[in-house]
Image (tube, rainbow, N blue to C red; front, side, top):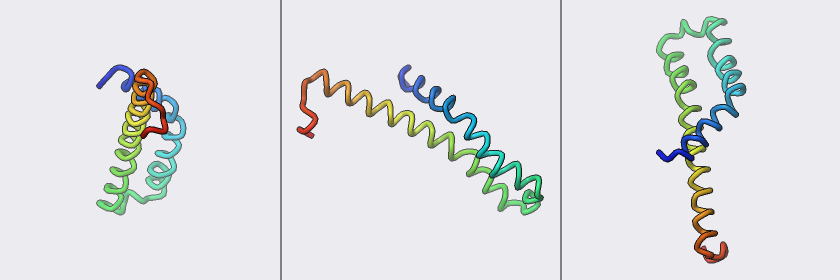
Length: 85
């Protein structure tokens, strides 16, 4: 993983830290406080998706954003017009 992609992903995590914390509070902590954890396997599956999906999406979005920037820089260096695509 290149350094710029890693920096983009770290920056993305810093940007979404507070909203992601609130997302976890609303989707996990409040239901646990209300007794949803007693649902057993259903709640565990829900919790796993809630915990795993956002970081995966953040990494994919960060890497995708960096890839688009890299492609745009390469296109400018070669002098290819944007309409040629």
